Image (tube, rainbow, N blue to C red; front, side):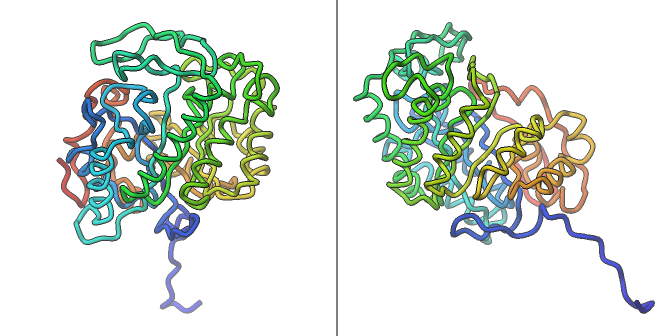
Length: 378
């Protein structure tokens, strides 16, 4: 080495390009799906949502918030849907804004839309419908409704015809998402929503072909992915899981048996990606899933306040990449920092996480007054 040569610092793999299906991503940071309750009673995304996502368009991939594939699938007040013409048009305004980028010059992130059917996580005061579920097992928690917190309603156990109709709803929602400008969709099979309810012993008491042994309990989730892939192509479909996580009163009962069987069945379809929640919390389990999954894997991590304060989660994300993740999804950092990728890349100061905006509550506006480092924020 001559005295004129410089030793350049190593570039983090977080900022290296990646491929996802047929997409070329500029970096490996994914904006996780984050419920904001901003769509209004009609489920139509408005200008506030378009600005929110466009501000964060430097992510490698944005997975837009949980969106109802049908009216009966609506979980919470003011979440968006993707089952009416107005909702499709509203989402088109969002995807156009992201495609234009934060500065309007183009080059914005690719977007997938998360399809979220609440199942028993729903209320007639919110959706106008009695919730559907694998079995008539009530959610043991209160739910936010337009009139405030209410005890969960008793769901109706789905008939075989209900299941076929729900699969058709997912299929139509996926087509609608592509029409709205999304590159693909993510099937939400985590956090106690409908596909997760079929997986878990505590919520699936069925004795037919969708209940009982593991191979039957994974059937609905597999059928949803197959239906969606058949509608828009497997390279446009991801699935999100949360092994061992008891959100929304879920009791899986046999986590160690469910997920190897589920992953094996899904791998045969070769979808775009598998998205695992809380990967760093259960690192041994994550490593088992990494070995079992032959395709692209997105690892999600909910950061502690200490991890975020230290480096915005950059160290955790880099460790997940080193342990086999292909992409890493983070949520709160993107909420608090419209230009989160730029700040991490430059090791710039981060806006702090404000806990009053973390709850999924009616009208959660969340961080609109935070300044960006290089782009305007409303």
